[in-house]
Every structure is written in C-alpha cells, then in structure tokens.
Image 1 (cartoon, one colour):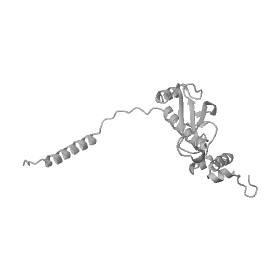
Image 2 (cartoon, rainbow, N blue to C red):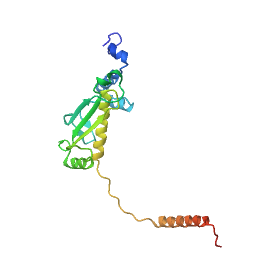
Image 3 (cartoon, rainbow, N blue to C red):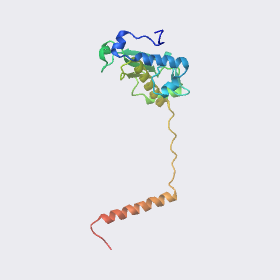
Image 4 (cartoon, helix red, strand yellow):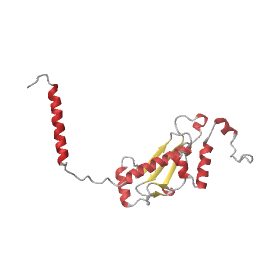
Length: 190
C-alpha cells in the first residue's frame, strides 16, 4: 500500500503488462466490506463472491457442494497465456446434493439429463483473460442452468371455446380472403 496516495502498489511487471485485474479484486473486496455488492452489480461491475450460490429465493447451494478446477485457457492472453490458469470449471453434484429436496432433485435430473455425467453438472468459462472473471461467468451459468432446471412446470392449458364474436370474425375474414383470391383469377363471372 502506497502511504502517500492510499492505493495498492503494483509490481513493475504488472505496470508494464497493463494488468488491471487488481482493480476488480480490490473492487470486490471493497464492495463486500461495505455491503455494496448489489449496487456494483447494478452498475455492471464484476464482483466475485466466495460462498454459497443463491439459485432461487429458497434454494441456496453451499460452497462445500461446489468444486472448482482451473486450467490454462486457449485463445489470446499475451505473455501470460501459457502461465496463467484462467479457465474455470465449476462442478455441482446434482444427484447427491443434500441442499436439493427430492422433488427439485428429480426435476433437475430429468431436465439436465443430457448435460450430467454421473449426476454431476459441470460448467466451464474461458472467455475472459482473468480467472476472477471466468469464475464469475461460471457461477452465473451454473445458477441460470439450475434455476431453469428446478423451475416448476408451466400450468396446464385449460381448453377454452372461441366466443361467438370470434367465430363470426373468423368467418368474415375467410369470406374477405376468398373474395380477394376470386378477384385474382383471369375470368370474371358476372
């Protein structure tokens, strides 16, 4: 920490490479400390929160049930591309999770059947250069998938009958359309 300006010191290599990852890390620490996480997200700032994932108001996945794996990402990255493990994989064991009720687990297993490997849902993110941003992206994807998977099914459609006015309008439109098509033919019957 630079005592004269109150800003964190950066190494010479970070200054030279133009690395700005300290800004998002400092931001998330600051936002957590002062309770500004929602405000920072509203402004589009990246805030990575360690801890449980809030899927729905009633469903929270504890951090202990999530497992992270990091590896080197393909694509651009400058000098650090071969030395930084920026690709993030987040796994969640849907089949054996104690945080899911039997009903929610059944729904999730049925709807995510094509994505599960031995009951485990894995989401990867590698589009960003920083691991922190890829972690946030993976968390968001996992939350979106789980939210969709455990959502209640839509209410069944109640069959209704068309009203008398709707039937009359439909028949009138059919007659008008028929007249238009009749007028297109080459012969005119008077």
